[in-house]
Amino acid sequence: MTNTTGAFQEWTDDIEKARANLGIQGMSVAVVHKGRIIYSQGFGKRNDTDPFTPETVANIASMTKAFTAAAVGELIAENKAKWDAPVSEYLPEFKLKDPRLTAEINFIDLLAHRTGYVGQDFEWYQRSKDWIELIKLLRYVDPVVPLRSKFIYTNTMYCVAGEAAGRIAGTSYEQVVYDKLFQPIGMQSSGMLMDELVSRPNHALPYTGKSFEALQCGETRQVPLKHYPIPTPPSGDIYSNAIDLAKWANVMLHGGQLNGAQVLHKKTVEMVTTAWIVQKALPPRDPDSSLSAYGMGWFIEQYKGRHTIFHGGQNPGYRSNMVLFPHDDLAVIVLSNTLFNELAGAIPYYIADRVLNLPKTKDWLFEVAVQETRDLYRFFGADNNPEILDSLFPPRLQQKPPTRLLEEFSGEYTHSYAQKIHIRVEPGTSEEDGASALACKLGAFDRTLEHYHYDSFRLQLLDDLIDDTFAYPLLLTFVAGHYGLVSECRVLMLGEEQVFTKVQPDTI
Image (cartoon, rainbow, N blue to C red; front, side):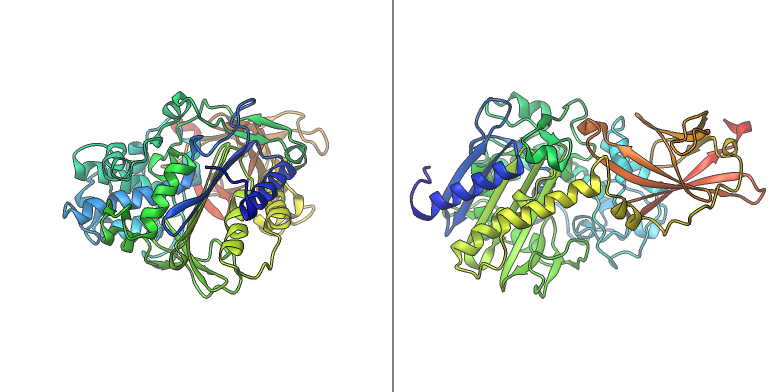
């Protein structure tokens, strides 16, 4: 459709200026209002040369979660399963250390992120394992809070739900999503797996900037595809385009109906958009929102008094977002092929302010999007801002050297869920004084450790998925056992701690 008149041309001009200002490679935007697409537009490029259009397919990342939840809901609506039945009834491989939890955790717990288990960020460093293996490893992991007591975002539990859905249907997770969602809704340009995405003639390749400054200068580079698919497909592996997602949005806005036909059960839509747990992990877009919750595959809050349901997504080289305003029959969809750009997060509210005639209290495109994108680069960039790094870890104590020789820390450390950590001494590699330093090898990552204080060391875990552009700051603390020998390495990553056990020399 064309968007060349009146307000639509203003939207196009503003969004294009904002895209160019941030240096985003390409993106598409679609707006659904009162049952029809009133705006669809592409911006920038889907690769190095070709335009990004509303028909361009891109990975939607964690927006996949809403599809996984709906697919489960459809099977339940067909009386093939129950929301409140133990998931282990449908997936025997789902066994936890505590048999009481195995017998109690249900689909709502999995899909509402309320199992009490952490997000397992280390799953990204387990790409050699398939997701069934990851599910089996959950039996060695302890919950961090009681069941249903706290929202903790986790991709792994969506794998459990997706695999269980496939078992219930007697097929695969992917086939369930196709049969129950893509086919009845008519999402002919949607699918899964990176190999399938890049086989589509009009597909977007993933990009990133080396730094925020490089991104603003338009200096993007393609993200290598060698590590796709992601390790947890039901949490983020779907690809689609703005037109297909507009159909999906219409279905969600109208109780499962599309063009007068009931393509999803109304009960499914009601269940996944019900607030099942309060969440504080993601601050609401409107600080005055009286609601901040999570349904199943959807965040739920208020924006300037309007009920909103939304979910974004972020995978290496892709950023997506969909925001629904159910009481206003409005949805905004954004797809882009540039990692860590928060223009995708800002555009829906820029458009909602105009469609719904809301007070324009923020400059979403040129202030909010820029600041939030800058903040992401400062947090995750390979040259993390020191102040941000310091806020992630306990206060650093100055002039507190290690309590033992570096050689005593060296060795192999194992974890029931994550890959092994290998610690060694590297002579003459300390950045401070040229002395020996510890080095850490985790999977494909091999880096020198920076001494923090006492027996704690900091590591910038550069992400080879995106060509060393982004880093995950880790704090490794070595702990001695009863016999005075180093026995554990406790790894703190983004607020989550994993304990690795040292393999003693006589058992290696």
